[in-house]
Length: 288
Image 1 (tube, rainbow, N blue to C red):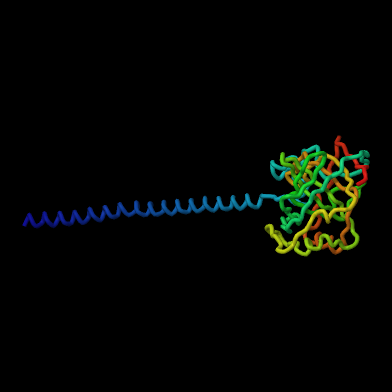
Image 2: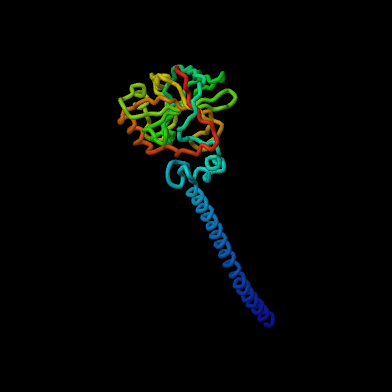
């Protein structure tokens, strides 16, 4: 009898102990779940913060252009690589006035035909020139890379802009740059530009080669090719200096419809004139 009572007591004691253990274990399990949930929330928060920071960085990027925060007056601040745009002492364009007369060596234009490799780069329409064309100045050869347009003109003539300007960009084998500038005034339609204008992309694009078309940049130039000369820079970022500028003294003409077709795409895409400082500006007085 005593043995049966002891057995019952042991069974009851065991059941009570198990219940106590289960009750003690239960809070630990709940705390673990809450900890995991809090950790997940913290990680998600950090992830969202990182995404928001990345979006903020994207929104803060300012691209160069011709107005607002990306306009020419801010180019030197947008990117360290553009510092010369704000600090350079030999920048382009300039006001061409009071040029000293000088009998300069003629530019020898050695242009061949090229396919129409045309691009709208978001700032202008540009034609990339096939290899094999060049100019020669003072015994140095510069290979023609591309030509593009600005409206209104970037250079001024005695304080006045013209309706547009074409730049033909060249580079020598040793890396030096030479740009031939051609001022454009409003006049009759210019058929030499018809194929370019007919294929001018109306939105930013990659380079497209127009099948079956060929042009020669020589046909885009005036017959008289005397020029103003000075040392300057690119007129767009990074505003690299050391550019040999030759702006032809004789303009070419385009019709108002041609000029407006370009201007409607880009608006004013000209950099304001820059101080000439102590640079030499000369005008070719030779005849060619």
